[in-house]
Amino acid sequence: MGLAIDEARLALETGDVPVGAVVVGPDGTVIGRGHNAREAAGDPTAHAEVLALREAAQTLGEWRLTGCTLVVTLEPCVMCAGATMLARVPRLVLGAWDDKAGATGSMWDLVRDRRSTHRVEVVGGVREAECAALLLDFFADHRVPRA
Image (cartoon, rainbow, N blue to C red; front, side, top):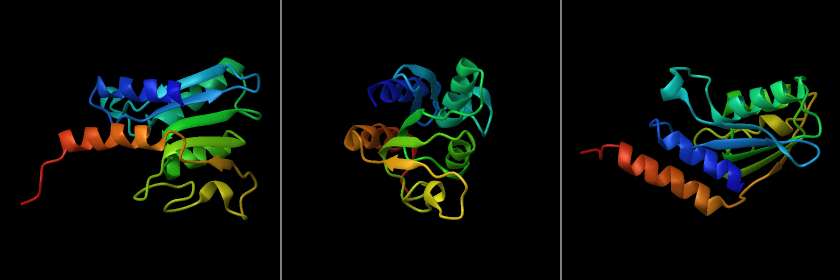
């Protein structure tokens, strides 16, 4: 999770929401990294998880990331949960839960839906306070109080 937190901090440099992700290969090495880059890239799909999954697939030369683990600082949204499933990632480790848009157990649980052909093991709450603090600090600085 420490490496994912480091990635999240990189997102702050471009004004992006501080979410970071790493993909750990079957042998325990990091094969993909990513941090939110929607603002930097002008790309609505440039979420940390998608970027880390892309890099991991390029590293392996294979879209199936079987035996890998996705580690991310914030619970994935619907798009990222779907990408995780489509990449056949068997395990997801997350920091902070996202009650507003989380799709791996909070608001929805796409990755463990019994109708799915591929389910993902979810381990949540890893270094949760630290991951949540990055987001709380970011949004405290970027949101205007309502009158």
